Image (tube, rainbow, N blue to C red; front, side, top):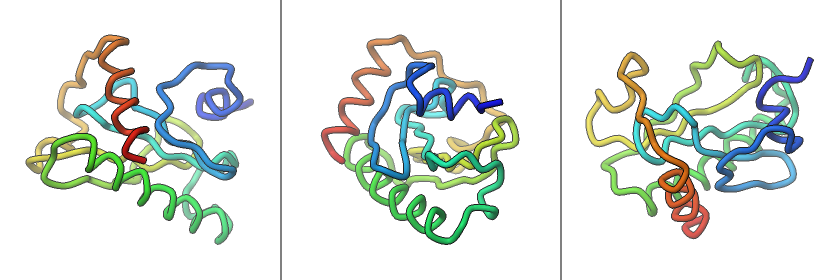
Length: 130
C-alpha cells in the first residue's frame, strides 16, 4: 500500500509544494512546529533513509540543502533545524524547521494551526526563494 507521501507525489492528496525535481519533492508540513516547517522526501518510496541507494540519498541531501537555503531566505530565523526522525510515515523524509531557539524544533511542542491562506503565502515565499 502506498504511503501518504507517495499519494502526495502522485497527486492523490494535495500539498503545499515548495520545490520539486525528478527525484525529490518538498512541501509544507501540515502540522508545523514553526512557520516554514517543510518535509523533503525522495520520490522513491523507501521506509528508512539509510536504506536509500547512494544516488537517491545524495540527491535527497543535495535537494534538502537547496530547499533549506530557500527557507532561510524566505522565513526569518536564526538557523534551520534538519531532522530525520519520522516513524509515523513509512517513507524516508527530512524535516527542515526554521528555528530561533532550541525549543522551536521540539516535537513535543503544540503544533501551529495555520489556515489555507497562511500555508499558501508561506509556500509562495519559499518557492520564490528557491
